[in-house]
Image 1 (cartoon, rainbow, N blue to C red):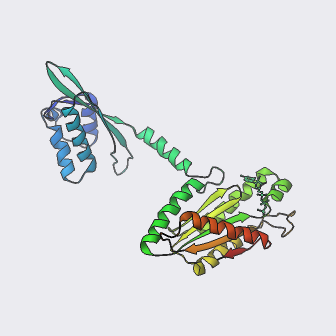
Image 2: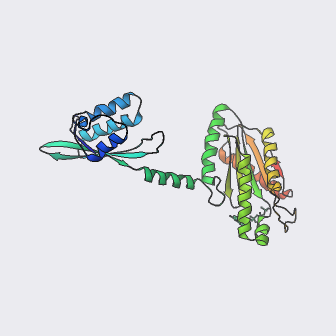
Image 3: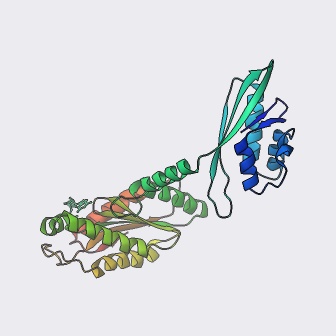
Length: 287
Ligand SMILES: Nc1nc2c(ncn2[C@@H]2O[C@H](COP(=O)(O)OP(=O)(O)OP(=O)(O)O)[C@@H](O)[C@H]2O)c(=O)[nH]1
């Protein structure tokens, strides 16, 4: 923590400040902090392209201009081998007819790590560990915009496990969960390009987006996804169609434009999946 005057000149530094400076390679003597202009330090950082330096300087000036206000800034401060986040807090007090400004930096790394863990979990399907529908929507939106900018096609496939109710009824819900995990693993292994993404869309339904891919190129890829599910060789002996776990898929592709939407893409794939189910399951319908 430091205290500055209204010109930005440091009047006081506490023990923790000095210790942090020593531990972080500052080899200046402890007393040299006093009378340094902290605003200048931030301005110099800003001039060398440091965005946080610019924000800090602006925040300090704002509180100096309005001493009743406070300013908070969360900023990363990583070293090559340490992930760190700090929060800078600027408040003021009056003493001897003058305003003084307290600048405190608190280590908030633990909180940031916890927030990042929560954020990652909120994007993940809790059973299978692959993306959930929310994260898929986010990815589709990015990929849609990219393909629209570049005038490139985007393909989308809906894949639904066949007769999964019969599977659950015969082998139990836990075996059903294990089967979903195996299917998810095999689909995510197959989706390796940065422009591809697979997610669990709902119960026994998976969704795959293939950026930069037309129908002709997408078709064999989705056929391969269905083959990978067959190759898992998970018995589904009560299925009236096949004694192993299979899936049906609907696939479509379009070039994003003002005349169509992401919802159109998903709806079309869903309709084609419905057709695949009605044609006898364990197959792809692509159009
Ligand atoms: N074990 C398990 N089962 C699930 C999960 N989510 C959905 N299901 C089951 O998936 C089954 C889906 O049944 P239906 O929608 O009738 O579809 P289906 O039996 O696969 O039939 P078709 O799709 O027409 O081939 C239901 O029995 C759900 O309980 C899950 O997380 N774990």
